[in-house]
Image 1 (tube, one colour):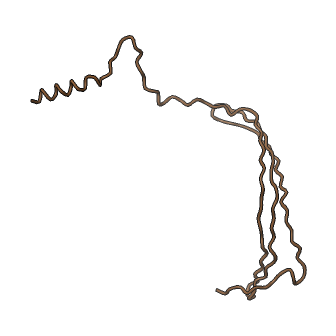
Image 2: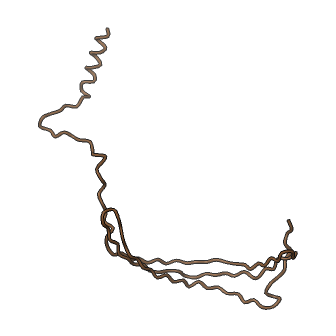
Image 3: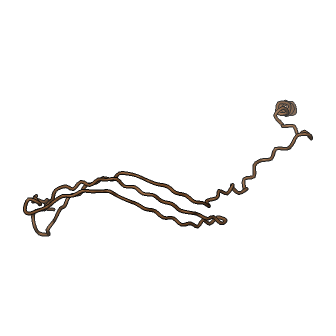
Length: 128
């Protein structure tokens, strides 16, 4: 009975085994330890960037021991930002050496004029 089961199993597995023909090239598995192709970082490059910035600020003055906080008006600031950069890289082996320069400009503006007693208002600050 056991011999019959082994014989049936081998008969069923026979078509699964690949044939090695003498006239066909053998397939090799890929070499997992070969180095990756090297990319060269040598050469000139240049670029530019542009953007917009915004923000706000409020002046607050806290005097220790004084029960009030003095607050000034809000300041809103905004404007364009941008620039350009250029450089040159030289690669030797795995090391990369280079020189880069950039020019950045910002046109962010905002203002508030403060004068006299109108400039600051006093608000009660919470005591801990």
